[in-house]
Length: 169
Image (tube, rainbow, N blue to C red; front, side):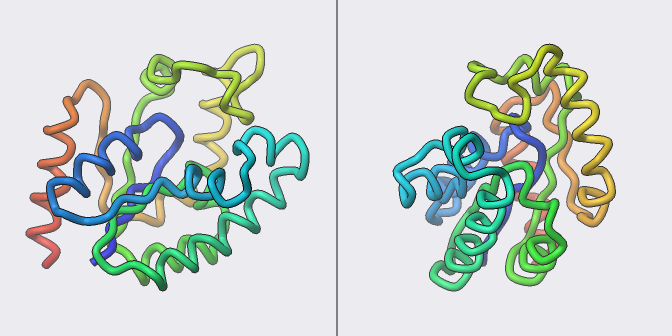
């Protein structure tokens, strides 16, 4: 079984994903880190040097590769992976997707270094988050398993996912 944790940046995908994978004795892949390791470039550098379109193409290619290669896996793709209808289809067909959601203020508070987030490294990150969430709403709304992560501990979110997995099986 492959479980995907999708959602906007800083909604808890990587943190929860690692714990969930550990609990299930699955492998864990943060797709952005996977991309960075394969390209020897940070996501920020890829955006700056090759553009977002190049990054999204690479992201799609590596998502397909990972979904073929692994079986017992928790995957945490980057927040923008859902801007491709092909990626949404892959995630819905090949994984059990959970959409992690948080309020813009929570997202800003969770980000340690805004300069490492190319889409948010602007004058007013919270306003940018609101705009991006509005743009992506039509994509996020295509997912049924929604988990709100505001004001919850990691174990609470993980248990909520595990309980829903039991219901899905």
